[in-house]
Length: 373
Image (cartoon, rainbow, N blue to C red):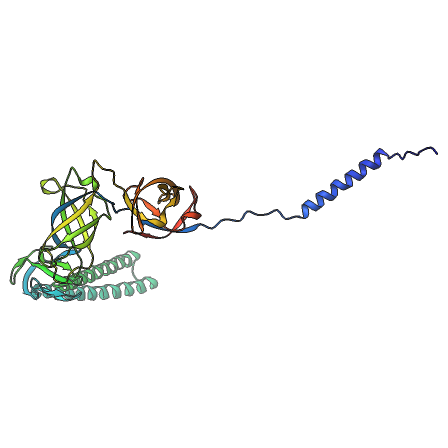
């Protein structure tokens, strides 16, 4: 039996392929296009690099001073009638400290009030005159010019009242300024003026130190000031009141030299003794990096991504301008408890101290907090 060959029409074959393509397009159209999921910005903990692991200890003489002080003065001139507080007295906000003789100021108030009453009387008179002339104008008995003149006189009298009112307020304020009050809690450090002294506006009467806020200021030579940075640890010795040194941190580095070409450096202390007073002597010891020896900075162990041999690794440094972290290679030089001595960072760098394994170079983050040791 001869075999039969089945032939397929070209048009039928093309139709089948076309229908299959249409079906695929319909199915692909039914599928939703997956949308990109926006990754949340990770919050990180950071700390500021400040503490040297080693170096040369330098000691500077200093003086205890108040962290916040104010020169107190009267805003008006006059004769001081009474000084109520003296040097060494403790005061609280709102305490009355001194008085200027108020007699002349009380006379000014009375004169200003009298001038105000006179101006108000004149205004009432001018206002009634304008009202009367306005009614006469409606009846056609006077000219409009007369009414305009009456209106101008009334408005001028109103201006006089406003000026006299301002004079009364000014005179009353000046009277109030003859009483000098404490602007904050503190200690009277200096009394400059005595009773019955003539003082000018702004002339110092007292110097007031804020209560409990003390710091040390030392002078640093110009050839070494660049090695001082904010947050650097310090030891403060107080020969007069404490046997042990106090912990401190540099909180201000001066940019303008004072006498002897010394730059002022301010050290704040913790756990200040109650017997400490402004003006007392102090010695401040600060560990500075040696010029001829490489000394690293101490950072928390949690900030480091170690390499295989534990002699190096990396950490992430936060850039405050871009809110991004950059990965930086470092070298581990030593260890102390839970701190590592690191080479490859600088004082003032803001480094991430938690969650470093979840970060990548250039990643944008937000600060959970910034610890300043």
